[in-house]
Length: 175
Image (cartoon, rainbow, N blue to C red; front, side, top):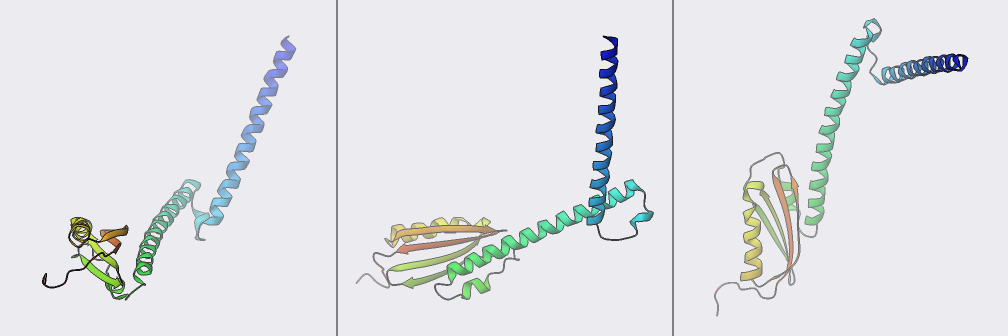
């Protein structure tokens, strides 16, 4: 029984040594792979912890750059989507919208196509009540039927699109 216990103990020791050896090989491979991804500088003269710090800093810089690119892509996609919605008529509003300006006065563009009105409204988050006021005016006072309402948000700007079917329009006096 002592012999089997001794063999089991030696077997565990050999297993641990093999596991440790494999772990070291894997760590060396990972380090080599990480090192090959970094820009080539004079890192050979740096100690291993310094090289790892340099790699961590480089990765953080890359993460910041990726986040900036994602934000830029999101803004471009939002403006492209808004321009597509606006392309049914004149595109004067989409070209005049400044996304870099966080606080702006609301802008509205109304296009009429027969009995259908297309309304494009750009507000800031602080002027969002205007959307509700416009929808109330259109539905209650103008008697229009809302067929589509959508919005998208980019930074502080809210892009609203409304489409409605006009039952009656009252211009001027009630003669």
